[in-house]
Length: 357
Image 1 (cartoon, rainbow, N blue to C red):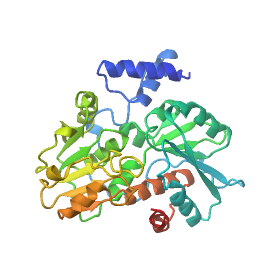
Image 2: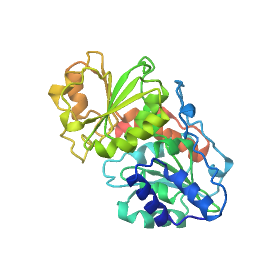
Image 3: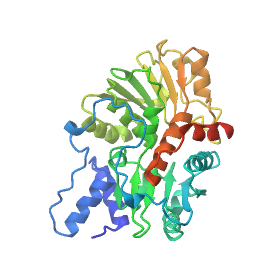
Image 4: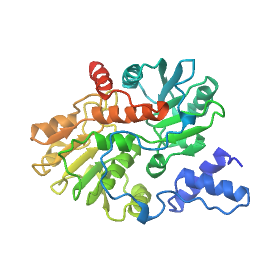
């Protein structure tokens, strides 16, 4: 039994207003079970605190289920992939994915398809009817796209956001994944220890959830969420406390940042500083930024420009910094592995990104 997508969204909003935390995939399964009068036996892989991963596990490639149904490279016709989101003028995805596919010797195309939120329904229909093998998803569609998925991987279920989708060539069913968690973690050099650290996350969107998940899986001690709207973030905080009971979570009004002396790792997941979107601004002003401990790490997930205003200020005061380029490459590499079942060349993809920044 297929649940009506508008009914699913309405029910999700109703539960959210009541303070109930549930992912769209969980809700969809429960509603399907109710419609067929079966026992709703669906349980998320991350539905209990005991199952939340707490051990740091170095990862270099996607380790999920790469079933033969998802691997379409044996087709005689060139495979078609795309990126959807809005706006996309800053995107380097075409360059890096083309480089990755070339390193595998695959004949493919990768299209940049600007998709405002109100055009998402038509875009999904277009991708299905024009025989795309899969597509990437970026802001602001990482959550809305989940309404159109037939299945989500565990990676997307816990983050509650999708950035990679596989289209089944026969049934046109959609399966969603999230490779941002892997990309975020793999971009951090091995000499930087995460266990026991106190972290600050600027923003509470899909990228923030991915960063938080990666940090919690690597045993950080506590995380402060800096947000514009503290009351609206309470649902996310409760969700995180349930999933990661060994990590302390708190929220702080982002405009009220004055003292960061207890933050050892500061991560920007907002679009402030991105090319084409407030590139001349910083989410943290200079005075509070310089209160970070001397050995603090400042990580900006933005990759264009390579050095945001935030990172320039951090380097001015001697802080170690990480930009979003390597995270961007690692998440794209994992997406191609999901699509093809093979691992493309990281160096080729990074060279392509740097040549076009």
